[in-house]
Image (cartoon, rainbow, N blue to C red):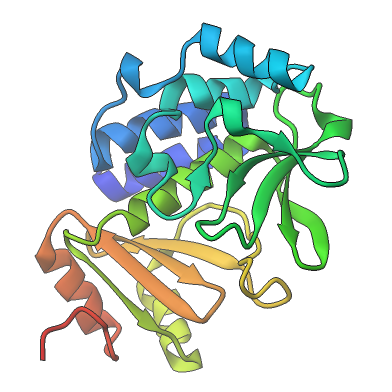
Length: 239
């Protein structure tokens, strides 16, 4: 199985259940970043202390995230922030447990307390208008987090980004393969088109609701190939 096919197959399993999600995170870290190590997670004593301060336990999926990748800043804090266990908090309503925040705290990601006893509960996104559905499971939200934080952690590597127009979106859909992540909301345009992921030409691409495109790859040649397939005003091309 080639690299792109492996990525698609692993993500298909990640979308199905928590076990697939954690296998994907492990595979993705090993292949695209660096392998996960024991020191990359929080220990049980730290997690129990955080739960005791809250007065209730974390869902199993959130515990798993903290144990496996909680200290991996490249996969959890490059752009937005997975809060450390001792900083997780209840929102002003007392009805949602906030575990991740946008880098300027404009929006937050949280788990409804009504589902806190579920092993892998749904995740909500808080906008100015209030909380709204984001993704169906904490484990899947962690897959999205790892993908996005990795994508935005690559400023010093083979990366680029550009604004999109309708013609470029059509070309993107024709030339690249959609990754099997479900549609989810872009917080900056909550009523617009969904976020989507693609792969091809040795690169991974994130389309932000038809507005913006990010690309990252292992090598500069792959990014150059993406630029040629999607000609336009790429921001990191030297004049």
